[in-house]
Structures are given as structure tokens and as C-alpha cells.
Image 1 (cartoon, rainbow, N blue to C red):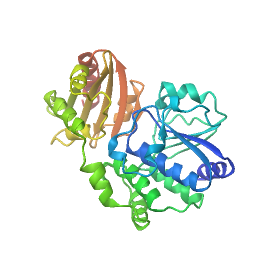
Image 2: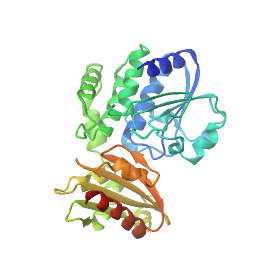
Image 3: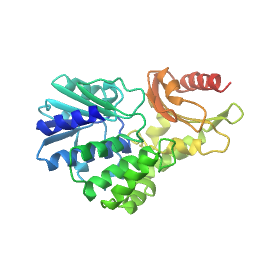
Image 4: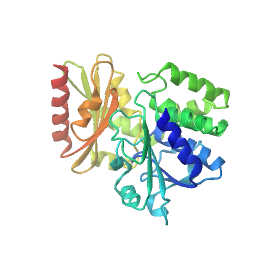
Length: 321
């Protein structure tokens, strides 16, 4: 925890920050960023939030969500940058990386096991359920009061990265923190209504398209969905990146590894990996330059959709032999 205390000290003595998250932001990225933004702002710090891609509308209920900016919205980049939930600098996206050249200090806070340990200061804890869990610890070290707004942001991050407490990264520490957040005023009804029971129509249409391309391999131990670019474009969902679609595949009885292949543009495929108990999908994703956690990871690969699908399926089959 000494590294986290050092980071807390730096945040206390410095005044001007940019908080940056990874491209195609998920709930942990959004929740941890907003919580740290609110915490630093309560100390009178000048803080900007920079994200290359838009965030999902399901997070609109969270406080300060309107503070997210794109790199083009920023005239002058703050000298001090905090990267949250980013295992590598390039996870921030090409447009953000261009702006990082103007910075003097980089702080890296993350929980991914494949983190590059970059930055002038870094704290990486792969045992934490989420970056939101680490931000809770950081705010506590800094003696920043956690009010109901902060608690809502942190709870959103933890819920989404633990799969509603169903993933193996959920620990007793996680549940103790959640209990404390509820005591601080986090609204569990908001989580249910906004994050779990308010799927945007386009997200449901994406699921429908994916299910039309549901395939099984290795006697049903591997299952995948595919989302061809033209089909996604046809339903006007190119900017929709739901976090939970792949979990429908993993929920099928007998499936050990679930895969989602999404053609984000012709010639480029993003791959989502999930596993139940046996396979370290982060190791598989790393072979394509990606990464993540043992049970949830991602990567991208140049090539046609069918070509990439065959390549990844063969990799998974080799592991399951």
C-alpha cells in the first residue's frame, strides 16, 4: 500500500489534473473516474476528464457524467495525468496518446494483471475486483469523505466489473467495501434500474444479431457470437459497445470459453473472451496483443471476420485439449 500512499500524497500537493480512461469505456472505467473526479474536486483541485470514446447512456444517472470530454475538447492538457483502469498507455486510444506528450507526470492506477507498470507513480493490484475498489482505498487514504454521490460511482464500477458479484474476482474485501458504500448512501435501486434493467434498444438488437451467428465448437465447450460490420451498421449500432452481451454465451450450459467477434470496421475485429473455471483467457488474448483478467479479456486482430474467428477458435481448442 506504500505506493498508493505515495500517489495520495502527490494528489494532495498537486493542483491540476486530467483523469484518463481506456477506449470503449466500461462501468469500472466510468465509475472509478467519476469517483476520483468528485473526490479531487472536493479538495478544490482543477480536474478534467478525458475519454476518447463516448460512454454508454446507462451511466447517465451518475453525478458529473457531463464532465467527460474528448481530446478535441481540451485546449490545454493538464501537466499531471492519472490513468485509471488502463493496463497500457495505448489502451487510451490514439487521439489521447497524442495529447499525453504534453504532460509532465503520469500516475497509473489499475487492477489488470498484465499492466505494464508504466508511469512516474503506479499502483497495480490484480487481487482487487476493480479499479473502483482501489479508488475507494485511495480516497480513504486521502481522508476524503465518501458521500452518496461518490458511493454511487464506486458501486457502479464494482458491480459492472464483478458481473454483479458473480465473477471470481469478487472477494470478501469487495463485499465489505460494498457494505460501506451502502452505508454511505449508495442507491442499489439506481444500479438495478439503470445498469441491469434498462438495456438500450440497440443493445438488444445487437444481441439478436449475435445470436443469429451463434456457433459451438469442441463438443459445446466453446461458443461464439459474431457481429459482422454491415449488420451492425444496418441497425445503426456502430457506436454501441455493450458490456454484457458476451455473458449470454458464457451462461450456456457446458460452455467453458465464450467468445464475441465484432467487426468494428472492414478488416479489423475486436475479440471478447470469457471463461468459467479452467481457461486463462488473458493469456490467450495476450497472444494477439490484448489482455485482461483470467476470466475476462479482450484483443483485436487485423483480418476478415471469418479468418479471425478460425484463428482464435484454433487457439482456444489447443488450450482445451
